[in-house]
Length: 138
Image (cartoon, rainbow, N blue to C red; front, side, top):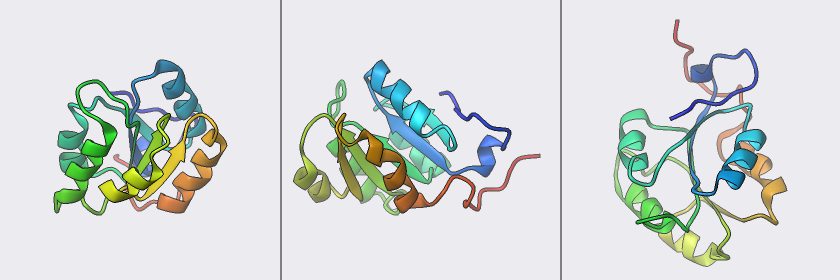
């Protein structure tokens, strides 16, 4: 897991976003767009456990994943009381907005055509990078 950020603000003081993205090119694009947030790229196998223990401010996932699809992840996280309130954004190459909503996703964006909408959608869901209540660790 890598925490990504480009300024001097402590990563823990910024909203935490978990991203499940199998495509390295798309992951780099997301890393660049979300550089003002604390971002961690996780596998489909580890994101549920990490979300339960660390409670990120947002989870972004692709639908097309190895072994498990992003909609199944969304359904599982939305079914758990401890993670149900975490906003979930499906950012996928599959045009499945209705299916994402049915799975409980809070938002859907189609890749790559709506990549310019990613930052505004993240701000809509969790606010700007520095508006979060997480305390910086000493």
